[in-house]
Image (cartoon, rainbow, N blue to C red; front, top):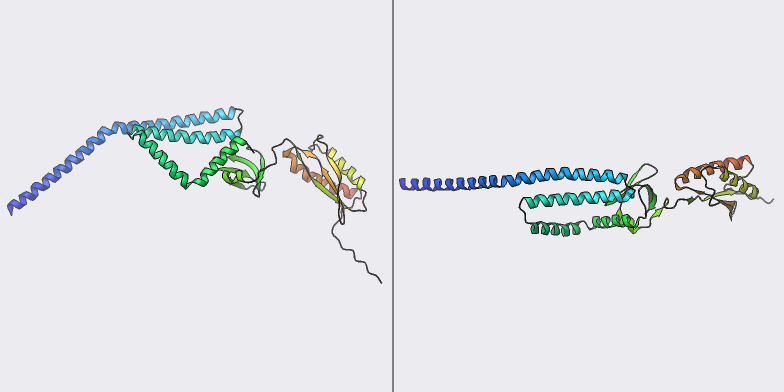
Length: 285
């Protein structure tokens, strides 16, 4: 019984000694690896600070450049991603991770992410298409897929539109490039199409003259191209007159509302009747 107790004690002591050796080896390994770990942390911190400085200088330089704002913002986002991926790769290499393993992991992760985020990748491809072909830029007023607004920003994944009623719409680039895009501010001028209806009893030539005076007096209507004021259609109960002046895109709605209000007032002052739907009943006795 005593021999058994001594064997158990000897075995326990041996296991304890092995555990101590393992812990000591682990601690020695940690101490040996500690300089590398500290060096990697220093590189990570310094690299992060340098990256922030580079991006800050890049942003300042882009603000002073004559490059299109859309290109600068898109390029900034792309460079930011590349810098951070490069920094993480350098830190892993310092920690002793083989470069082949890093490349293999990045490649595998790229394939997995590509399969999982194929819609997002289509948005990225759409962002590159917008950047290269430039169907619109920041500040343009566009319409697509039933949504219209001013382009506030073009990111890698989304195009941010700001609508007239103060809504923010984020349209995926992939879907945006697949649909029709109407750019209202792409050209330096835009034609304003207005139609004014007068009754058959009113003087058509006088109405056209009054509209011509309104067009000539408005300071936001361009002299060239010349405005077109002609009879458009002969309706069931009205003569429809087309008034088509040219304006700068940013003045479109101001001129639209001004001419609509001023035309009604001038027609009333000069006896030009504006018809409305009515039913005439004739009774034969």
